[in-house]
Length: 173
Image (cartoon, rainbow, N blue to C red):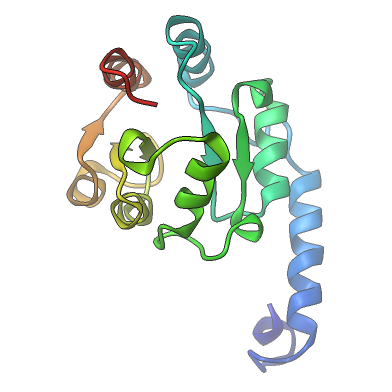
């Protein structure tokens, strides 16, 4: 932000501009501006109903306020026991630190957890944290980009539900 405003990447105004940007960005979140992909809400609710022992968390490289606002705007915040953004964790993805913090907060061992993401950095973070991973291809990247970084790749919310339900039936988190 500082570089765009002043031409100097390390100018002190950068931090304040970043906070102001995040605050404004969060106020723009509604179910219309940040809707879930078709089938995601019902998949989450059905997973909760079918596998009540499974705990769910969210981690994003966006600010924590944005994460919580998106979940709330889409009516699913109560399904997520942990809701972290980049400002809530020591290091952003692709580092595994945030995922390890999520696991600790959820009371889950990383080896028993599955991280679902749509970007190569998500798969790298899961690997760094010692977690299994599922890549989805309805987000920002196609399978050729996502596939190499994840243990499993799915193309629909129904496939994701089935993959998670299979894992839950085997005793995973």
